[in-house]
Image 1 (cartoon, rainbow, N blue to C red):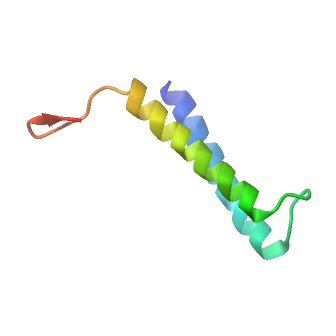
Image 2 (cartoon, rainbow, N blue to C red):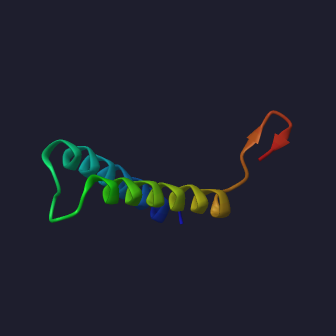
Length: 65
């Protein structure tokens, strides 16, 4: 699941870059910057969820997250 989370993170970064480019140059393939921004957010949330669900517990001091 770590590789899937990393894939989602990479796709989120790509969607963010496309959103920045679309905001400066206009719609890309008739898709506005808002759609790329929304895709970036959704992919990043999926990556965070996968890391929280399938990752080993993180220990900070005496507490376990």
